[in-house]
Image: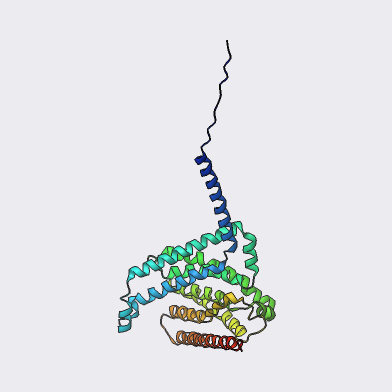
Length: 306
C-alpha cells in the first residue's frame, strides 16, 4: 500500500499582518506621546485653569442680583446664565484634565515633580491647583456655601495650601532675610493668593475666625514679599523670560485681598477700597512700564540699523 503524504498549506493573510503591525506601531507612538507629555507637563500649566476660574467668578459676580438694581447692574444682569454655565463647565473640564495629567506625572515622573518642588519658582505653582479649585467652588452654580459638600471640598482644597504654607513660610522664617531675597520672585505671590481665596471661601460659609486667620497669614507674608520685590534686592529678578507675564500677580494679590476682606466684613468698607486702589495703582504701573519697555526696544532696534 502506497503511503500518501499529506501536505499542509499555511496561508498568511497580508491584511491581518499589516493590521497587527499598524496596531503595534500605534501603541508605541501613543506610549511615546504620553511619555513626552508627562515629561514636558508641569504645574505651571495650571495658569490656564486659573484664568478660566477667574473669568467664571467674574461672570457670576456680574449676574448676581444681590448687588442691587442700579442701571449698570441691571444691564450686566442681562448676561445669559447659559453662557456662564458653559464657561464654568469648560473651566471644570480643563481643571480636571490638568489635575489628572499632574497626578499621572506624580506616579510616572516623580523625580521631575521632586525637582520642581525644590525649585524656587516651580514650588509656587503647587498652589495653583488649589486656587483653581477654590475659584470653581466659589463660582459653582450648583453648590451653595452652606452645604456639607461645600464644607468637604473646602477642606480638600485648603489642606494643600496650609501644608505648603508651613514649608515655604517656615523656610523664610528659619533661614532669614538672605534666603528670602534669593528665592523671592513674582510667582511667590501665589502662596498669598492661596491663603486669601481660602479666607474668602471660609467667610462665605460663616467661618469668620478661620477666614481672619487665613487672611492675616496671607497679608503678613504679602507685606514681607512686597517689600522684598519692591526693593529689587539680589535674587528678586531671578525669573525666566518666558514667565514675565506672572508680573500680573502684583495686581491679583491685592485684588483678591479686597474680595476676601469684603466677605469677612460683610460690606465693601474702607479697607477693601484701599486694597482695590492699591491693585489699580499697580496695574497702571505695570501698563506704563510695559509701554516704556516696548518703546525702548523699538528705539534700540532702530538705532541698530545705523
